[in-house]
View 1 (spheres, rainbow, N blue to C red):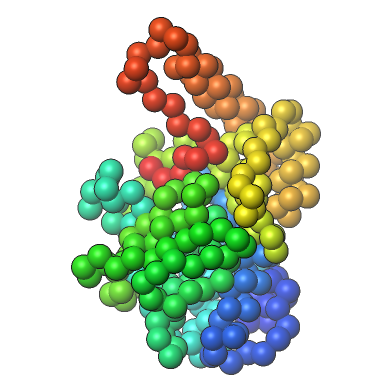
View 2: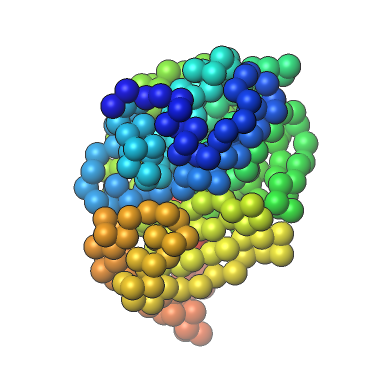
Amino acid sequence: MIPTLDRYFERIGYGERVDPTVEVLRAIHRAHLLAIPYENFDVHLGRPLRLELERFYAKLVADRRGGWCYEMNGLLAWALEAIGFRVRMVSGTVGRDARGDRAEGNHLVLLIDLDQPWVADTGFGDGFLEPVPLVEGAFSQLGLPYRLERRGSRWLFHNQPWGGAAGFDFTTEPRALLDFSERCHELQTSPESSFVRATVCERFTPDAIVSLRGAVLRTTTADGPVDVVLTGRQAFERTVEDTFGLDAGLIGPLWPQIEARHEAWAAARAEASRPDAAATSRSISPSSERFQ
């Protein structure tokens, strides 16, 4: 399928100006996130994810699916460049403090060069809804607090307090999409990757971030998060279709493994909370786990 801006704009419901300005960047970034969910279901459906524009364009636009950072930001980068924006793909890293340099490039970030560099990121799931200038300091969106910090040659993005990951660091050096191929393969195949260990689906609404991590549905607003545990395949399929706009017939068969993982997690959590459990025991909620 040949990618076209018209079909992309139809997918995200965008029908306004098309010129390389801050106002258009904000509007397209917002429309993209309100229309296309972040999700990793293909990893669990056994469908390899490759860094090819035609493949993720067909998936996200024609098939009306969602995707993860390489797909979401890869698609946005293509669209912005086609409009006339100057786009830099840069290397982002989630969890560097815990995982070290081996985690380099486990996230793709975009810098858009206008009056100043702007950070665009439709591939973080529960990050920010609109792009922000590359300037140190705190900012708020949807009533949620975020922060950008400069540390030497790298920048740090601090996510809102209830996000699936605390944030990421990133460089400003330009990269090519294929530079992320090795990390993309690892994240969808390594048993240590949380993308392999758990399903995740997230989307923005005009006033909230809605996340489905395993069987836990979380709605986060300025008042904080509200979690609901889905019970039964029917509830899961209805949520996938009604809340995230995805094909329940395709995603629904994943429910038995999602349910089994949730029950195992709940049992481990209950065991760890026993008074005689080791003080060093640790449990990670499926609603907060994200990257490998």
